[in-house]
Image 1 (cartoon, one colour):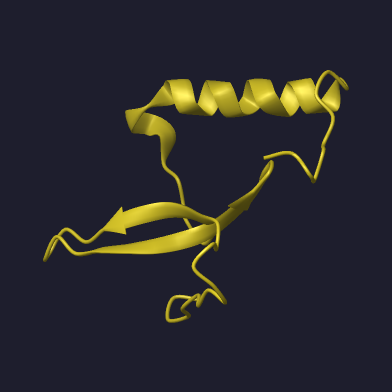
Image 2: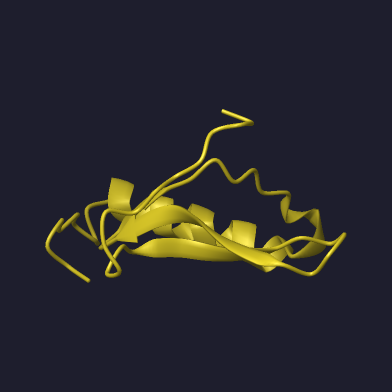
Amino acid sequence: FHFSTMQADNEAFNWAFSFKRHRDGSTYPGGYCQGKLLASYLHCHFSGKPAIARHFVAKCREYKDGKELFNPGEK
């Protein structure tokens, strides 16, 4: 996967991120996002922002406890 690329079929593709290369400052899109689905090769390291990890775990608990149901049509 390190050398794969994603190609959108149309302009309305739901890119999840915009990445910035450190060496030259150029940007490129990555990942896919629709509703509550996020698909990406992105590897996250939360030590710089622990609040993000806490929020993610809290949302996982809400889902597990049935407080928030998955709705694939939700934006």
